[in-house]
Image 1 (spheres, helix red, strand yellow):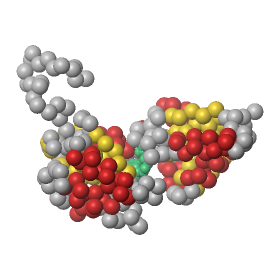
Image 2 (tube, rainbow, N blue to C red; image 1 turned 135 degrees about the horizontal axis):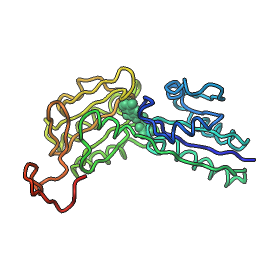
Image 3 (cartoon, protein in one colour; image 1 turned 180 degrees about the horizontal axis):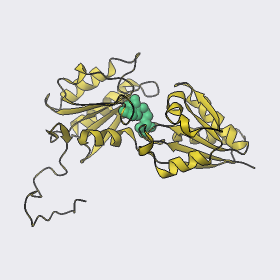
Image 4 (tube, rainbow, N blue to C red; image 1 turned 90 degrees about the vertical axis):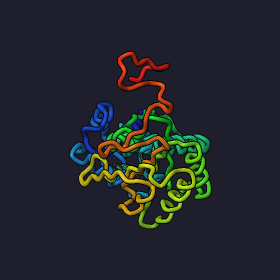
Length: 265
Ligand code: SAH
């Protein structure tokens, strides 16, 4: 009998920020597949389970192993950090399954995608409230996306005054992209625009920095970092980064009879 494949994002790191459903499906699975670093974060939950870990760039192998184990009848959790559908493994599972079907291979497994807390909202919570208005997430990883495409999107998001959340900002081999990205954003935003830099959100060694576009590159940025660049209205209050919900004072904060066009909840 074919098994079931759970594609599960377990949030930024600590157990308290995993969803109940995430904990439940990991509990119910007899096989766990994931990137080594992520599996280590949940190691204590994995006793008596078959665990397959792979290195960073072996995503396709990881997906194939998970599908194979599900086809053999196991309940399998393929784990990613954050949300598995945000720069995670969910899409790749469906791509591999559709390719397998095209080749006439069996694909008779049930797949369930379980949402998780993605880095954007995890780091936003630590920074204050920077995502209260429209925002764009952009990954600076050019392994799968050509750099000119990424740069074009950064430019469009900067020009349209989106708050910009930058995933995968820099790795040991990829060091220039974050500099170039910052320079493009500076064409449209003042150098004093608030920038939040969060490393290892909700993990041991967490670092939260609120700085600005001018100084952001003076801080440590790596693959465990997410950067939030404010829009033209973002301000800093008591060390927290805040993007106002509205632009033009449609609501007056300290009046009792404040009624907006929309209720703010
Ligand atoms: N699926 C994940 C994203 C994977 S891409 C999610 O939804 O969060 C990997 C990138 O996510 C990292 O380079 C970093 O930019 C960001 N990231 C993931 N976990 C993080 C954490 N705990 N703290 C800061 N950034 C994190």
